[in-house]
Image (tube, rainbow over all chains, first blue to last red; front, side):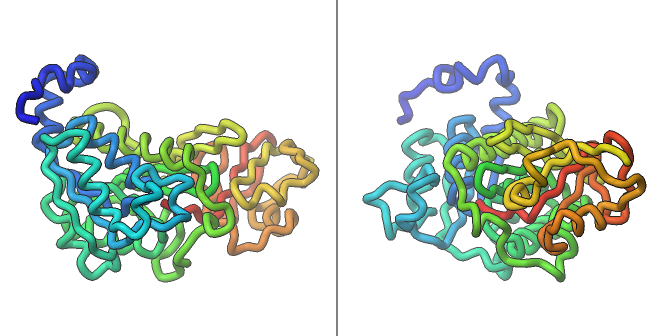
Length: 235
Length: 76
């Protein structure tokens, strides 16, 4: 909608963001790897915030078991590629966002090509070994990662810059990784997924604006049964 | 004996003795021994935080320590 007025669209972003900061977000590129419980929420929030270019990557299609938590999933979209739905959603929210969607599986081989040229990588993956592969690619491409992970009603978020140790501080040595964490036993609950996605989106904006405190070498833990919200030092 | 504040996260919470988060243990107990004494399989603990800082299993526990043990969390 060309007729929409810039100032009006982002009116409620001001003056939390200055006009210069809003313009900076509009000139930024963010790649979202994984468009499930975390990625769907991140997609929604970054589109509304006004990131200029979003690259959306996921090779999966929606399944019935996604409906309990994944914002982008709907009953009539079962079997539809998540990346296509994410593109449609972003365009419906904010047609000014340039969207590149890739219906591609994330197996490590093509990760560098999927993320290069971005300002921030959003790790919304659902397997631990692929997170290490993403970290390798992001180190090579010199791009910071904002990582979210969930199990049940527990969420964790960290920010990893190319020179940081990153995932080995959280999951142990790369060579000894299991594919999945305890989420295979707990499932994942909608409000935990979206809460964690919100924290990731906040980290992304802070990196892009060089503003605020980052969760670099820190792990934010949220446990929603007991209302524990704590930032732990990883080094 | 010393007292520690113990938090077990996600699937580890089932190993908490009698829902009692303030646990009495012998002085100088290592985290490794604490994990064993609680009956938690070693490979289930991926992250250990003492007073908000990541520590290894050889850490010797002290009076009043806040201990958090985490399994691997990887879902998205």
